[in-house]
Length: 87
Image (tube, helix red, strand yellow):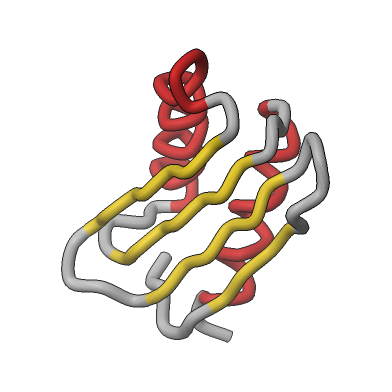
């Protein structure tokens, strides 16, 4: 899948996250989280898993997390990617 435009999904409420994606030449993932010290490696692992499953190899992914669980991370990222992909 190719990211062709900017898109976002999610909210800034507790236990949720905002995901922003946009086109880019290389794959870049930026994580800002209220639980970054404890769980950044798990958040990054889930993001990498979803990106690999969707076949994303280039683009900018920015995540602002407020303590979301795995299923929310997956759902928000998939939604943002679908909104940003080719129609």
